[in-house]
Image (cartoon, rainbow, N blue to C red; front, side, top):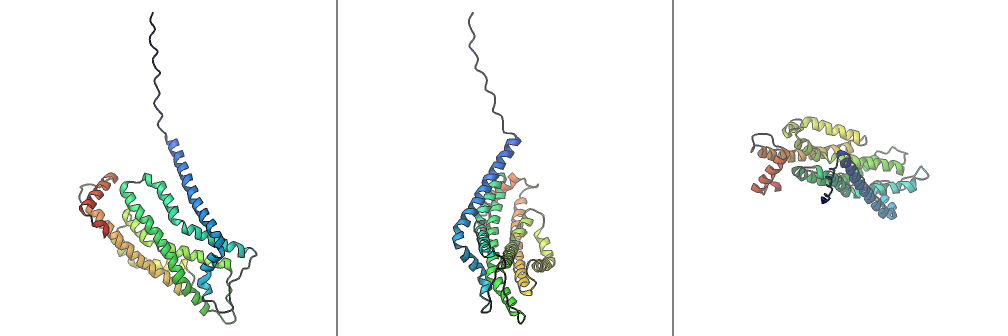
Length: 287
């Protein structure tokens, strides 16, 4: 009897990755992005540590410039002269690495975005970073000198202004955050309009409420003096008008694209329509 040739065992099809493996891969990617973000902050911090006292002196300069002769800041805690400059340095390291931190966030979420969403998100991220830096610079070069000068001029007789460096640290951090966040108003307006949550014309009609809200927010985020509240509220209103202008342009562009179809566009259709619109109107993106 002849033997039949042994049939080769059929290879089992490779198991497709299930939802659990996909979730684990996302966690690993998130861990890697967080490690790179923390590593960048650590490298910047270590590079700035030798200049910790200079970083502190730079941030304290607006107050030191307006203090009367013979007055200076003080340290009421034993470790404050050592820890406070390091805290300023850590804050400077985080501030300097914000673009890289946001890039890591962008790299993590970008694979799940459609093409037209990527086209919109990246300019928003860049503008958010620039506006945050602009808010901090405005606070440092404009607000701090004006506010500190007001504090010194209204100093009661017989009272010496000797600010604790830890209290100054808290004050500076809160002001930097307040003005950096306030300068994000145009980005918030554009996002609300682009997602369809609010129509730009509706926002324009609510302008009186926005004005009142800007001064209320300024009163909450700034010290109880008119100068700092005014210096925060007015830029917020100007930036709101800028964001409203950009939102109107984007809204008109979206309406022009959707007018070419007879039904609401899907994400894929929106991407194709935007590509075709840009080819027919090459100058539209420059406006």
